[in-house]
Image (cartoon, rainbow, N blue to C red):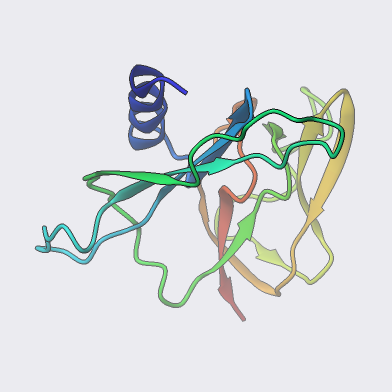
Length: 165
């Protein structure tokens, strides 16, 4: 993969709420992950964004020579994270579009500061024209709603922060 394309991917991760991005093609796999940093640290041992190039397994029939084993590119990223020490995140289990309500004219499943129970539906993620209900895994109060209605979400992206009851 070209260095300029990798730089564009790193910039995409830096400027978005994406925590990790993995792209594969032409026998290579690139994984970019954003890791939060402690305030005031700027050492090269603690980079903000890691890019790892990994060879993709070749099919058994193929006699092609694989690419280099791995390479690492480090970039620095400033990430502002909300105080989540006592909050439990509800994360997206898939890539898709986030919806707070079952229909455009319907009431949202949950509101800010509303109490939720274990197993209660909190939103829908549309993926490939299928509506997937996302349920709370913890009982508590909705402390933050981190995604706007109708916006795309990534796998593992935090959707809600729940203050446990």
